[in-house]
Length: 95
Image (cartoon, rainbow, N blue to C red):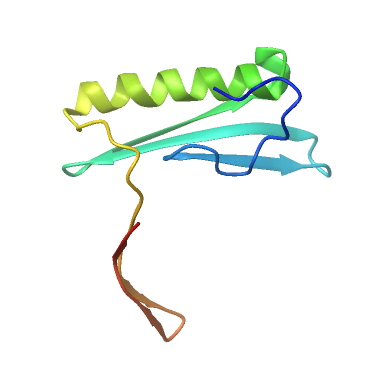
């Protein structure tokens, strides 16, 4: 996971995003899993887990468990879907 002393990126691992709201005093990670018509998400607050690193570790563990539950193969490959948003077309791209 994230190394101590290293600045955490907003998207260090697939399926997990950082959220920070000073106004609402909310800081943590959100994990999302989608597979075969099923989806789930869960938030992991820094305060509940003791640190951003611990919250990220909990989010990764939850994501991995959900992927197994859904039968989704584990991969770190990022895939961008395609569609039209606000009149702008975008395409699927495998990174």
